[in-house]
Length: 135
Image (cartoon, rainbow, N blue to C red; front, side, top):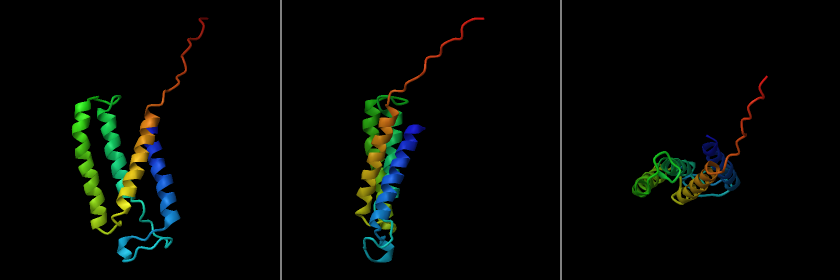
């Protein structure tokens, strides 16, 4: 749960910081202007799709996943990649984002995925349970 939260916080902090900092207008405004109060770059849709798809893939089939299998991981990477590409393309086709906003979202999703995997693989320090002395 902490790893997922770390990824989502990464997307929120970097994504919204960039969105509000650049203020790029979306294509539905029929003009591409920076610092105009828009929130088009980077695509949050693309970053969340990338993060969710590849993080679930790692949780299932990576080395420490639920069902570790390198061959399944390799077979599923193109499937998730197609889903991520289609979702990004749809955001551009539906005029939510400029085409150049999509790779920025993918990069942000990749960063969030790496942060989450780092948190997930961080060694946990557990306190040893010391039994109470008898009596």
